[in-house]
Image 1: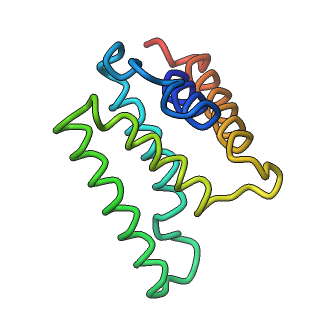
Image 2: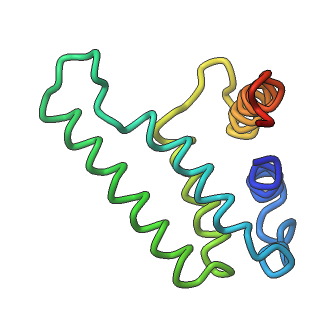
Length: 132
């Protein structure tokens, strides 16, 4: 997860030159980014079971499914070229769909998401039954 956010933040702050060669050096990066995309896109687009469903909620759910399906296909078919595309998709989704009023800059939003996920990961890893 940290590798994925490191890549996203480097791309966001420094552009393509800041991440050159990383996809080739880390063959699993496409799948790490894909997992991040799922963690970021799905909660925002999935139909909320507690809310009253409407046509818009089902349309948003389907848009999320289509986006994630396309990213999965890309990662499977061409992991190296998928890395910057998946990363840019996550960044664009963050900018356009989940702007954070507390973090006007997308970099700050990505850092906040990274920090939240790190806390969750450490909590899961530190749980008493985590190593059984």
